[in-house]
Length: 490
Image 1 (cartoon, rainbow, N blue to C red):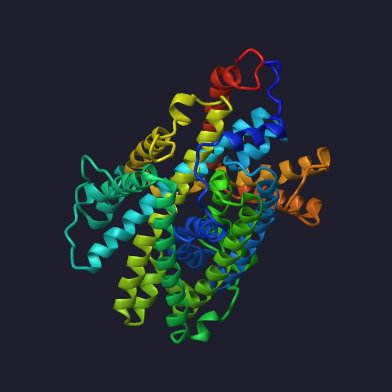
Image 2 (cartoon, rainbow, N blue to C red):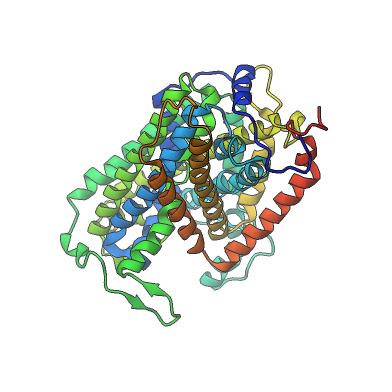
């Protein structure tokens, strides 16, 4: 196959060989896979983004924003599910696109999935650090040095607010350390990781259910009036509320849904991937959307949307009605729950790298090295952990969040196109799970994700373009030459 053909496709038959040659253990059932999906999705979104989205954009109609975002993600989830049933391999959107659109697009998607998983884990690590510091404050530990719990930019901003001199050096030490804790668990093994995740998910879902049940009795329905606040424009020209505000909030809380596709990266470790992966993808998304909507209704019912705390909205809502113990409980749940989000994101990143390395697009000695005892890609896991910890230690959360969102939206849009192409070009393939009304579902999924991409600011697009330029250079300088599909490479 010609080196000059970046549109060459990996034969569908080759995926069967990858499955047979896999050294990974098949230990995950459908409920463990669903727990992985729930563990990836419920986290920073429900504990952090609800405050900004309700206070500044949607008001009580935040519940509608979650429904809209959930429906949009559901279109992509259906497409992921069909692909996962056909190609039960790790690699997510990267692997699916390689067999349909072509190698260059697959590489490009895989490169941008780094923004979803590695940058996503970084974002969550920074969020975890903020909740950890809040927990220390609730426990009476107040005098924590700014330079140890903030990145350099945030440290200067905090110092300015407090009217003190900005530190010459700053590092978000808790964020860096928690990444290494998760990395150690992942190196140990997938079964251990899954067990750890199952325990955390149970605790996290229990805490979310507690928020819903305990918060209902404190709802003041007058806080829901008007449900969709009247549209207004502030002095800076930024619009708030109204139907446009509900849509903007949907784009913001989209980050809260990132992670359901992580289930598909575990296909080679699933006991019955063709049935269990589609089930887990859709089940985890439906469960999380339902919980999000209920929590948003409780939150905006307990506190008027204009008074919602932006930093820790759910915990602060219970504190505002005198339930300090509940605020402490929720903060603990956030600290514990965010760990499972990082676990799934870093786990997924290493599995995508493993798949790319097997295809020759990344160095196999580093990214495809399987530990002889733990049977995990340990070198790749350590590398990913090291990079994520450094970035988490020095990067402001808002920049990491936007980069995570745009990378994920791009991958979601492309997977909707890829599943449609495969249905048209290879209709004879056995599809254990088949999306109904695929042309409509794929079209809506593509349009939804592209529209959300264009709702992000110009600086985020610039960073995406720069990141993509680096990825394209790596492809043509290394990956195209070393690809297993290259006839000049053996």
